[in-house]
Length: 236
Image: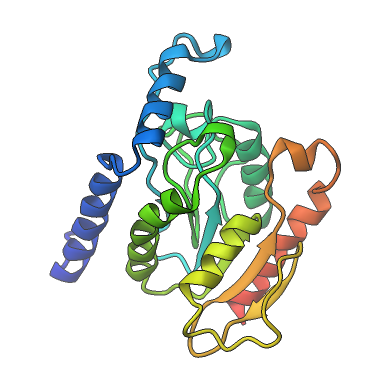
């Protein structure tokens, strides 16, 4: 089936945005670090040709839900070129998304492994792996226009799931002048906010990092409840 002009323009807009992200070099510290990680590699991935570039978002371009994380993992997304793919955080995330019906498979190892998302788009606050997993505020501000353009291209966007407090704060800053949520939203696992004024709703979750999952701060039932809630909210 051939695409009509509107669909063609939409596809082209995504392609142009992703190309801009992949070729971005706005943050010298991150450019140097992502290349250093790829040069040194991890012993288990010596045969891999690391992506070592900024990582664009991915998923269903008709999604009603956007998931926002922190940044690519050094030997996960920075290696594979796809958000949350190839590390323990992604293993935890995709198992939950598959359980909730948002993903067609429970695992993701590389960007060509057949993973497909349904009604969901995954992105991050920062697009390059940062030293110590800590992007600076300016680095996240440099990435923000990419996030805003992804939001704009998701024409049916109805809800946002923030994985971690940094992503949560980024969303609140983006909507600071338009949100009408009272009291002021505060980060907590499973916290839900209707931002009002026609804005997407906001659902918060602990980040599925090993620091959280291996210590029991974030359990499988806790994470499953996030996606069950997201499914219910987007269906209302």
